[in-house]
Length: 106
Image (tube, rainbow, N blue to C red; front, side, top):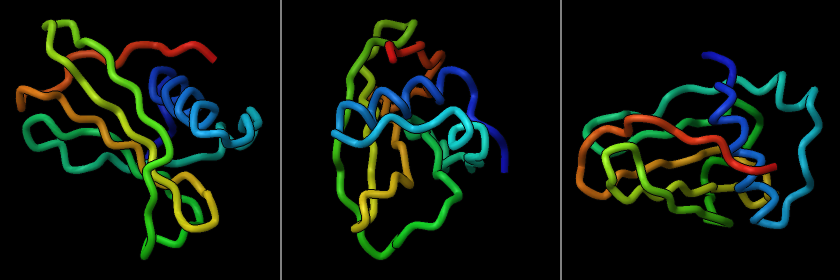
């Protein structure tokens, strides 16, 4: 378990706001602990270690951007049935690892 990086934090807040969720408090963000998703090839992202009903998931927002190597990347936020964020999936479309996650506007 680890804390969010500044880039992950900005991505999570951006996706939450885009998905219509309330802007999280700084204390909530400070308390969030994450685990990396299996990062084989192009898959990356993180799972939020908070109470969530993981038997149900719903994609509520996504954003695409270009990685440093010019490859298209898609980042998606999933929530449970109670609209609790629990996973951010990051996929680089050419099956190569993500080089750098950019900062997103809050």
